Amino acid sequence: MGRYLIPLGLFVVLVGFLAVGLNLNPRELPSPLIDKPAPAFKVPQLHALDKTIARDDLKGKVWLLNVWASWCVSCRQEHPVLVELAKSNAVPIYGLNYKDQREAGLAWLNQHGNPYVISAFDQDGRVGIDFGVYGVPETFLIDKNGIIRYKHTGPVTPDAVQNLILPKVKELNAAS
Image 1 (cartoon, rainbow, N blue to C red):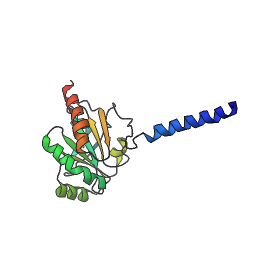
Image 2 (tube, rainbow, N blue to C red; image 1 turned 90 degrees about the vertical axis):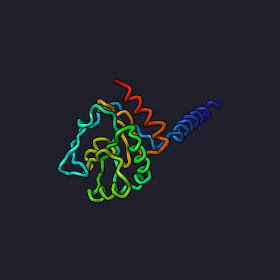
Image 3 (cartoon, rainbow, N blue to C red; image 1 turned 135 degrees about the vertical axis):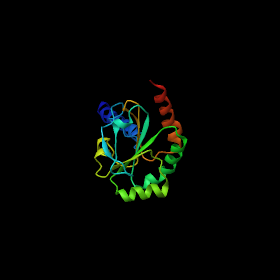
Image 4 (spheres, rainbow, N blue to C red; image 1 turned 45 degrees about the vertical axis):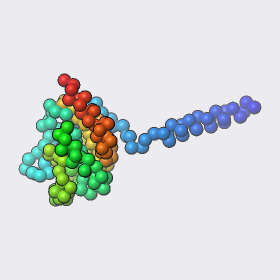
């Protein structure tokens, strides 16, 4: 009888691990950058290559960084949500046009609307790599001190805006 208890015990442990694994959300990838300073960057602006935008230009305000590309199918899903969020003036949205062609990015914004205060042009993807971007779209909420407080992987939805992003924006704006 005792010789059956060890295999039975191993089986129960394996079933437990399987049950936990099946209940995890594969879209929730923890970012090691949460509660750490946003990576420093200084890149050209998409609309004006002779002008730059840098992380330090944005200190002193709570802002969203949305990583997007004209070739990104999922970006098409989230774009109307970002346009509506921008109209609300609840939080400034800055874009990071990631591994894209400048002309394609400009045409995308002309066709679908431009929710961004400024869109940075990250043609080679180095800024995205520093932010740990593994696919677009990704959106980061950054506080007044330049600290990343939230990361949203995948398309931003109206539910995510109302229940996650805006409450966090309100909380961060209320903080000193």
